[in-house]
Image (cartoon, rainbow, N blue to C red; front, side):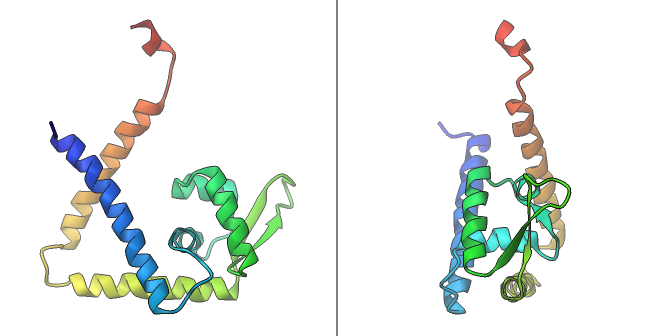
Length: 155
């Protein structure tokens, strides 16, 4: 039996996969072969900032080992540069190279193009705002479910 809650979970998963397919198609269209769609989105989330891999994990909600692997590959392909933090030698700081900034601009153009195509459709900024607020509530709910206080075991 499906419920609206379960249908929403399935929709979130499907949308994520579709979106990664859209990014992959954009990379293919521009003949970018040395970075994958997940790495491209990590790169986009770094943007114009400089941050640690840990910060990137927290901001992007990527799994730590996946971020480390993907950051390594993006470094090998000259999309990002990595340097040990001056203040904490255990920490690696990353920022985009010129090649990374070019890919960031390409992805930014894609987002702009998509937003322009949405003008005049039923997918209004207000609907996106409502959807984002709903997804944020789901995020807070799921986050609360992962917090173990020890009291739950007393039931």
